[in-house]
Amino acid sequence: MFQHTRKTTTLGSALTLAEVIYHATVRDIRKAHGNAFMALIISVMTTVIFVLMFYLVFTFLGLRGAKLRGDFLLYMLSGIFIYLTHIKTVAAVAGADGSTSSMMQHAPMNTVVSICSAALGALYIQVLALLIILFFYHTLINPVEIAQPIPAFGMVLLGWFTGCAVGLLFMAMKPWFPNTANILRTVYTRVNMFASGKLFVANSLPGFMLAMFIWNPLFHIIDQARGFIFINYYPRNTSYEYALIVGCVLLVIGLLAEFYTRQHASSSWSARR
Image 1: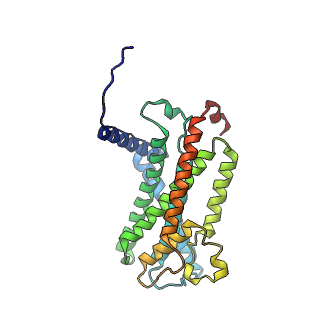
Image 2: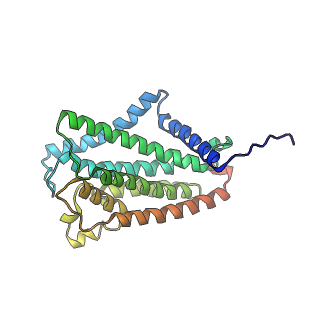
Image 3: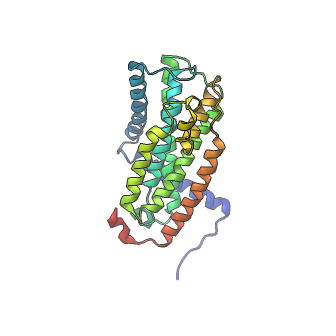
């Protein structure tokens, strides 16, 4: 009865939503540790250690003979880092707070804010880790030369975008089939360890093997990124348009599935997770 209503413009609503997403993103990043700086360091070091381990293994085993000429660390980063960005985004979005989460009891909070904050938090950590690796490698070991840096970074964003779309599908599936969703996400991660093509180039594959990987959008993204990074490599068998189209289709399906799930939300779902 005694309620104060305040009119807001479209711009004001957008700014309010952006502010809520910002604070939710900060919360999502620092939830790994009570100290914000330590939470950031832990998240970044996870990515750095993963990349360095692959680099050292390939160096000591003598497997650095890539099918293209150029800096070996950039060759590793173009595969491993985009793979990590994609997989970590899938995990972050799939694990975002759903419609039955206790966070949804707060008025400004909704699933859109939850999904956006999880996705932006994953992107922030990965981009920060990339800048740290490239900075120290450039200053301490070898100058970094990227043929087309802006399109190459665009492939990182495309890997993040497709990760958001796939993660949204798993998020919408989780309330209905929680165990199945977790198993499928694990299988998807393990399959992409090999199917993403991060350890080889598409131009070196024979036709019968290329058919095993060409379905994977992440395979196209990594191969296209190498075409932008290395001046002497031109990807003939992949296309970033394919990855973009698949990502858009999966995003639309995921949004529809999430909307349907939200319409049938039940508080008892949280007990099944």
